[in-house]
Image 1 (cartoon, rainbow over the protein chains, first blue to last red):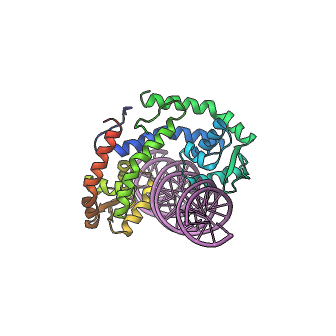
Image 2: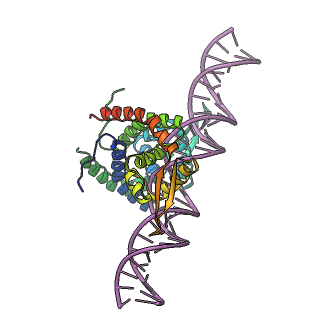
Image 3: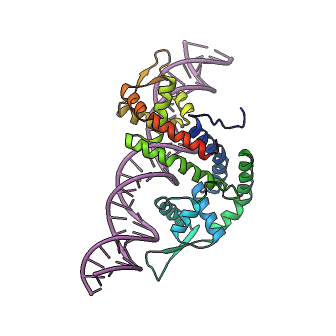
Amino acid sequence: MTNSLPLTSRSLPIALLRARERVMGPIRSVLADAGITEQQWRVLRVLQEEGPQEPTQISERACLSLPSLTRILKKLEDKKLIKRQAVEKDRRRQIVEITKEGMQIIHANLPEMLRLAAQTRELMGG
Amino acid sequence: MTNSLPLTSRSLPIALLRARERVMGPIRSVLADAGITEQQWRVLRVLQEEGPQEPTQISERACLSLPSLTRILKKLEDKKLIKRQAVEKDRRRQIVEITKEGMQIIHANLPEMLRLAAQTRELMGG
DNA sequence: CACCATTAATAAACAAGTTAATTAAAATCC
DNA sequence: GGATTTTAATTAACTTGTTTATTAATGGTG
């Protein structure tokens, strides 16, 4: 039961999978208690850090495809963690913004999430 | 457009996502031409390398949860790429085996897949 | 202005990940 | 031997990933 990830020829993709699971498992657990998913957290975090922005930009920042983001925004809107407003100049666009309820979730979980991120850096050798 | 992955504080999980996509994108493309998915390939590959075995063992080797594996085995069976036989001594168990058709898919794609794996090692710094 | 290409967002279809529950067979324990 | 626990596999419900198609608005060009 070592901490090193095997990087031999054919096990490489599997090593990536195991590393991902080792990192994301505890993160999912914390977020499940908060009632949101890993991807929903990423979207909220982008909005909290960088302010209101358009879906295309969010998808780039949060590393989510636009189709996935569409669904996620719908769920976050249902939970009232974000809100949207139309852009007048270009009616194809919209601006997404985090709500007060969304900010509360961020503040309640950010310290623990940062702790887990630090732990991850350690796992990966800094 | 550098090749290095940013490992700063909060971007770490996102770096993992980007690395994963950079690695798996080309792999998915090759396998799509062969008519199977990344996970189906992993299952076939385990069976080809290690011989017939039980689902629990496959799930460990291929890094798939048992529920996911159940579905994947069903699809591989429909495609006639694997076959199963019951275990007499313990009727909860079964033995999964790759078929000739399954082996053909392996042989047709293994060289290119190994090439991509080598490329991945290089991307990750060997 | 009309036509065509481009862009932002959404929708649809399928495969997989995750968690929790369920089924059925084996093993254990009294 | 019968009740209980454990184990292998499956099922169910929900969310996301991926690809392709679609909708609607904008931009550009003749």
